[in-house]
Image (cartoon, rainbow, N blue to C red; front, side, top):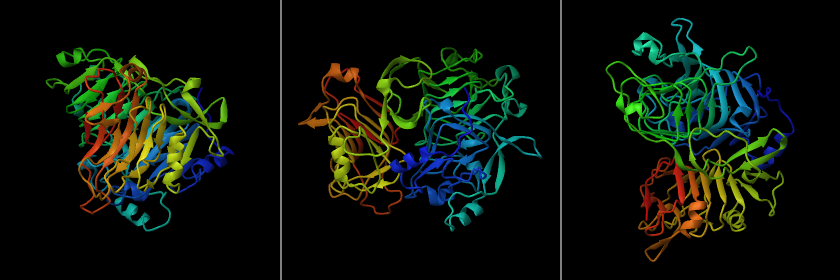
Length: 533
């Protein structure tokens, strides 16, 4: 069933109690003029002001259908559908949610610095914009001059003029693909996500939903703007229901548990496919691709890119997320997907009862899920952790000056809007997960190094304990059945700070029991240097 167009209602009041800052958490449609379909955070789209910004933003879309939304996702911005499945939040019409090269003055240089953003849990059933002169299908590039002017106003969500840039058409002879290699290619439909690292796309469906005329079910996913440079990224649990996966110039990309109806096309090198598949038939005579579960469209005389693949995902724990159930539209839940073994393709199913925890609008010390803002004290946050509560962090920067210690099993610490924790000044980590704590989820956080007094052994995240050189993480049997998971963790040094005493020796330390062959930790879509022991 296709969801109806969303309207403002009383759910907004409950959400506002959990997410009180209207500048960092925006709820659609409640916080927007429905006549204005543009959602442009000018200061975050502009790479000069956005790349090292202190601002953090989450935009939440309540279940419903949204037509002709124009939302170029900028730095430090996360888009979250609040449905139980991706089909509960649907973008139709033109554009929807997309990401572009950060250099709006010259998009030809590509997306090599298009970082720090994410989108998850919706369906994109959208088309691009047709240039009236060339008739090519394009995306709009915001005017840099207008972005600069908009930053000087208090209105950071503003309509801006655009220039049009072609997305690429595999069926056009100039791309060199024989017609039999790209059957049923529809250039007008799709989603653009032209990014490089620290910009995951999760739990998303591209196309596949009938409109009122039972048309427009196609849709391709573009991971670069044409063949302009892009380098690195992560797709997880993404369903391209009727179209192609266009890699363009991408490289160093991880594609985990994704399904592609047709084929992949393009790409440079270093692709890792895990538990992913396509239905696009054979890939010519390329021996590298004959065994791959995702097939590549081939150009005559050119090999497909180097691909490493695992046919199944041996251990898969999807990222926790927030959602409303269709049967209970007044209660917000924290979804905690359970461990899946030996999986192939997507899982967009509804949550089992054991996978969902209701979030109370009026939070108190008995709540199973506690929601925090940067205004809460370290003591309040640590008490919730000690009490075994799941923790959701609002966007912003948390200056705790002490380590958040997670000692209870099966706890979730989930950040939205790229919530950032600044490390203590003594070299101790932002978060320390105890060896005895199993099944912990650390998800959606940015960890920032500080000016520290002690460099040796400093770290931003420590998982497990070093017991006099002998790492301990619980028993093999229990940990293998209930591993922890890290999703979308971004660790960085410097950037917004010019202080050269800002440093850290190791971004992440993970301690494993010696000679231990058990599966303890699922790690994906991180941007950091890691050390394991």
